[in-house]
Length: 352
Image 1 (cartoon, rainbow, N blue to C red):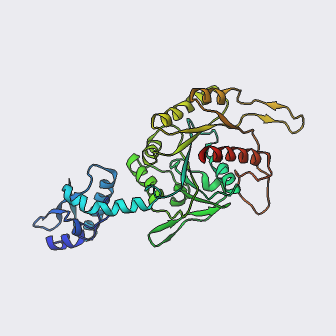
Image 2: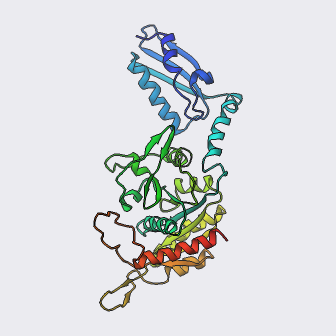
Image 3: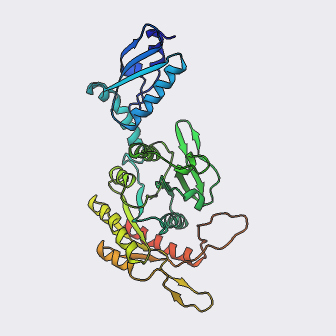
């Protein structure tokens, strides 16, 4: 059994999902009606943005609160707050953004690692390029932006989770590289079933709500292809540069060209192409076998008017006792040395 006054008290502390201010502060409770039997509650709320995934989340929150306190059924309607109310509280959000990596008041350089399709080793390249940049004396972070197919924590052997200090998330550090990933926020390798707007919000949080400290380079492991998350990155980071990863097979290179063209169309400079799984070299004979063919990386670089900055053979990292990191190559490993050369080229291009 609820009264109108009780409903108002329940709604006042709930926050607008965009302004992060309570409905009491924004005067966002437009109308409340309780039927005579006091079991059906009808509510009209005003928020900063309507018809979004955040609105749906808010709707679930409001309904749950009212039902938990005695409502049998709940009717909800939404309208947009007046512009003057939105502008009144928007500066707070803008200040938070300016203080983050998205604000431009920092020296961090962004490198997005992209591919046309999955399974070509994009995340492996991201992880090892980051570690190699660190070995060359740089302060490095990784955002595992492949939100549906996160793999960076497992590749680096990370078994810890971020901690929260104040209102900031502290990234996990491994091999001297700071890492944040969707994988830290799901249980038991559960699938992610979010849609575009919710993914964009999570990606923005990785920039604004994580305490990165001083970074020289922040690498973003993008999802394969040209979907919502890749588009969000291009909008969020107008100064990001990109590395396109492919394998030598012509079909893989053809698909990768789409990711490269997307970068060019959004004025993102392409640093170069990395051709992964370029060949397999027999330890017995020394002969190279081109398992996936030849020429894909060169053809892709030609289409994108850039260069191949690395060719990586099929090899496993050395096995080390007490060190679990299934995709990180040691500094003295042939591939570790090749990644070091790629990192040196990246630094030369980025700091020219």
